[in-house]
Length: 402
Image: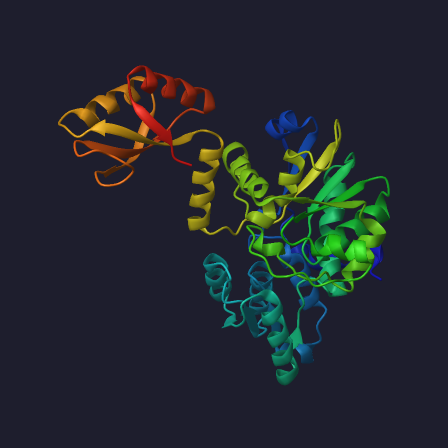
């Protein structure tokens, strides 16, 4: 099984080429959670995630003969980017296999680093199986995203950095997919300071490592769609499970809404862009899943490769959840000036109309009536309540559109 010495050698090996990401204290998140929260910003790595640590360490352990044959990797995005960037930079041919559902931003970035892209399969498992088969045919080195000792050792260098940056840490909260990151971090941290608690976080939709711990063996879960696509692993690693059993104190799960809220929290309050897998550790802390109070907690923001279209939907849905976006279906008389009068009431209360839609044939309206859907931005739930009271006081009939 992987040991601390291997991780220390990996740290020396990759140090010249890997950014030592900052560990920043967040006053806002500390106040909200009752702990001292420190964010480890791995989203600032060259390829946008921690994955390049393990990819680079594996590449640097290859022989000259292996380098000439090239590398192959299977990835939903972040691991592929790390392999592509560090292999091509060293003149090593790289072929990255990605599921057809891979986020466009990650596909474009991986191709931009100079790798050959092969789109295959509807999920990671199908893609990985085909990529392994091709690597055998081509006699190329297959770089597994998590179930490889040198990859795990590379990810574990994060743990050494954390302890060096803040020796007073009580807890480290880590995203969990196949287990390479938390296995490596756990081994490194517990090897230096066994008192530090290691907590893993998975999406409730795909808790493959949690299931493996309960069954004491990797089990394959059904494929699920999740915001945390970077850790959407159906089966925990055979090499990572023993590490998690040995070094991880517990694993908790969070829901999709929790992940979306954490993405929005990081963006608005910390000016930090995180993808779903990158924000999931914070989601657990914000939802008090870890159960800590008055602790020094490092939260890994493991990646920031988020599609802008998905980001826009997360922002809009987050505003709805927070009561900052309100949609009403208002019944009006269908005559000149009706909309102007409605708008004046809304404007007087300080809300901003962002969208309207008229309908004269549905929702039970009469021949001289219209229904109008009005979407508004407000300052929050209290402001929305005040606005609704003003509309009622002005004689308007309306329904809240969920």
